[in-house]
Amino acid sequence: MAHSLAVRPANGQRTWTVIDEKYRTVAPVEDWLEAHRQLWSPNTVRGYATSLAQ
Image: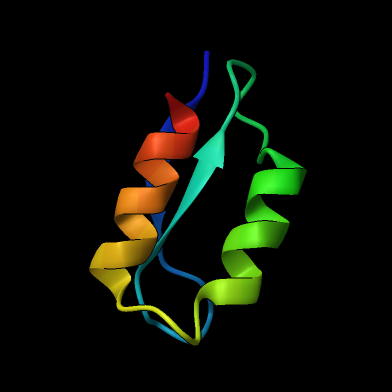
């Protein structure tokens, strides 16, 4: 089971990622989200992270 999680990297801007049941980042999802973070609003990233976690 995966979960979406709000994170605040070193640059200080909150974003969202997806973690697995062992609290590890789901790499393929993170790579895909990272490729789109500059194009989308934070709310859109949150929506996609939440959907992908389900």
